[in-house]
Length: 81
Image 1 (tube, helix red, strand yellow):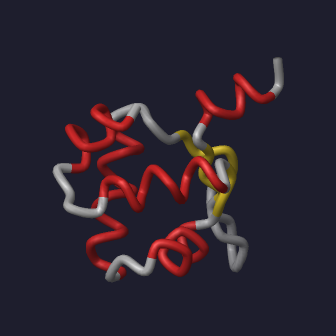
Image 2: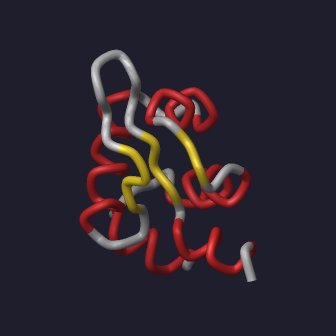
Image 3: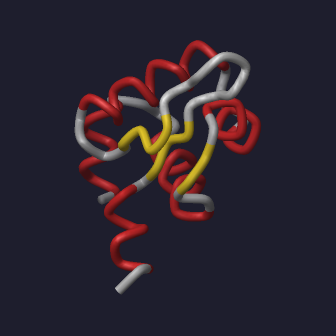
């Protein structure tokens, strides 16, 4: 997964991203940005590339003031076995 994240995100923050999504596989965008400490514009680009690259999925779409909930589905599947 480390190589896939590095390849998909093309980011210097790939290890920080990996550590964060393994520590919390279900999260809001704002939580991801806060936990990683990555600048917001970079974090948004990284999240978009991971969603497009099939690393992350959207569990719940944003609705009104309720933010979207993202998930690292492959880890959650392993945990739920």
